[in-house]
Amino acid sequence: MRALIPALLAITLLSPGTAAVAGIKPWIGVDGSWSNYSMGDVNDVLADENALLKGTPLHLWEVDAGPAVGFSAGADLGFGFSLGVGYQRLFSASGVDGAGWYEQFRLPANGITAIAEYAPPTKGPFGVRFGLAGGAVMESGNIVLGGIESKVTGTGPLVETYVGLDWLAQPRCRLTAMLGYRSARIEDAKLAEPAATDLERAKMPLDYSGMMARLGVRVPLGATPGAKDTARDPAVRPWLGAGGSWHVYKHIPDFDEFDRVRNAFGYGATAGLDLPRGFCLGVGYERLPAKADARAGGTGKLDFAANAWWAFMERRLLSAGPLEARLGASAGAVMEAGSIEGAGSSDFTGSGPVLGAHLGLHWKAAPRLAVVTSFGYRHVRVSELKADRYLIYDSRGRRMRPDYSGVDVRLGVRVPLVK
Picture 1 (spheres, helix red, strand yellow):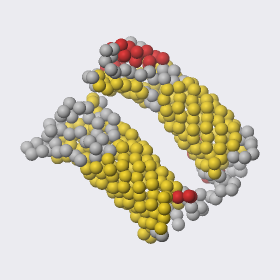
Picture 2: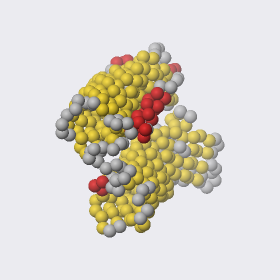
Picture 3: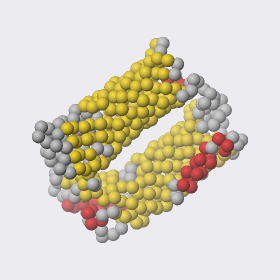
Picture 4: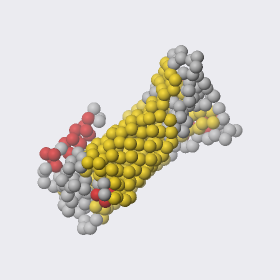
């Protein structure tokens, strides 16, 4: 229900009928930030665990700050006022791994807020912005001790106040820098299996309150004075794409009874916008299969299959007739969705980051068809592999961390949606 109200507000603000009202200009935004936290109760637990680690080279660092990423949508109402909704992902973690110890405290949270801002009218590209946001923070973390994962949940109020500096870099792009304070405390965070984590002595408060610094960009969706309408601007072209790829994997964990997986073919789809000045922004999905059959005399099969999602940016380096050379970078997340079958069967789960860079060649084969190929390297590693919440190990006693990183070669097509 909490998420429904901001969603309805966003739909109302961004609907064509609302945008048509004089003086109302819808926008969307993305931002990143760094925040201080007030995790005194969590740090007391970490101190207790560090006492057990005394005499080893391991140490659990205090959780006192962390990054965040966010998305927002809203509308400028005129006279300097703006209303919107926002989502933030707050990251917080501490852990050790080695010398026979493995402990992880991952405490990310999701924040959903309603936003109200005021920007005094100014001349020129720079301006000041004052903001107030209120909503809820929801814990979605986990603690791993003794090889068992315990989920952490809870909800609390979230209030932010900030002041920012705006720079109208282009008619359709506004850069923002903000400094403020966040109050976000979950009084009674609950653990799904407190006995497994030795934290059953009390409910554990989580406090994400503290100073924050934020950088972001906002893009207006309606007509902007001095700018062309995106739908009619031939320099802004939406497109859809699909293709296949060949990957050399860095390390896929192996069992003695299965063949080793070193490379495989993948497939996926993309969507994006070709922008002025040779830029391109988009999102993509790819299925990364890594199957292994049982060796002679064995039965069953091993299937490491991951789903990768990412956002990417490309920049045209040079062009000659229908050919273009582009340089690109991407970032996102990978989610393991594999399984093992033998005497029994188990489904794998896990996630990790995706980071990559590529050099591509685009050939405009027809007015509404482009053939694209690229060569690049991508870091795609699942941080932990679990089966039924338990960490699993390969035949050499190493904790499983499928690493799909390596060189990849891609071939696909892109189809523009407008002429």
